[in-house]
Length: 141
Length: 134
Image (spheres, rainbow over the protein chains, first blue to last red):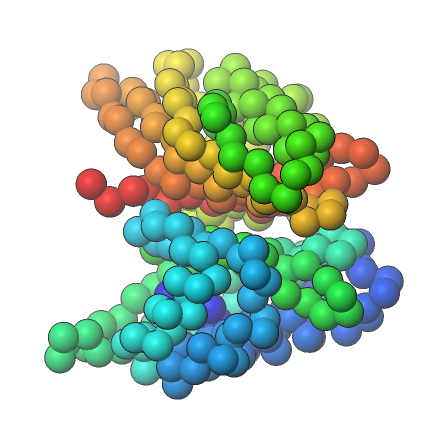
């Protein structure tokens, strides 16, 4: 699923958001919360960092709204989500975070490992960063 | 992507129209292998995911440069645009018919693009697509 764990070495991209010097670290921390929400099945933790207009495209090409993602968290089969890299690009009040993550879990009594890449879009809104979009894709070779 | 019947959200029609025009310009430039036009559409920090690979602006332009001359047909399905001040999120479906080694390869994917308005121009800062399950 969508998200990442902050092992994360990040690197700044473009125009640093002057109004929020800690943008990168805040966003990476929230990506961490996002990943944890899946592993502990806690939609409340995720609800505050996803904008009401949030939309996600999954590796299977499905479109999920915020409500659908929160419902998905409740039934998550992920036991561990490890991020292999994270890069943050700032564009004024918008931030793009890209990276890879590996999910380990158990589904129908069978263990699985999934490698995916993601691109998340964050927006500085009413004094805080919220995610407005996410794209996840199974990792290619 | 060639766009049709977009759904506008938030009543921000002017921005929606401008973003859709940029999507159309992107599609047209790709079909012509027009790197100069693409350079004006892609932000320098573009992040692109396709077929599970992360690509930069330079890598995207390089791919277009290497593309063979067989025209690809790109037909879009329903498209939704969400405007958040100077940021736009576009979600839709496109069907593509490409030719590789003499074989016709149809495919259908869901895409999501992020545009940011910089100095009056909508620039593509992130994009990606996942193949739709058959």
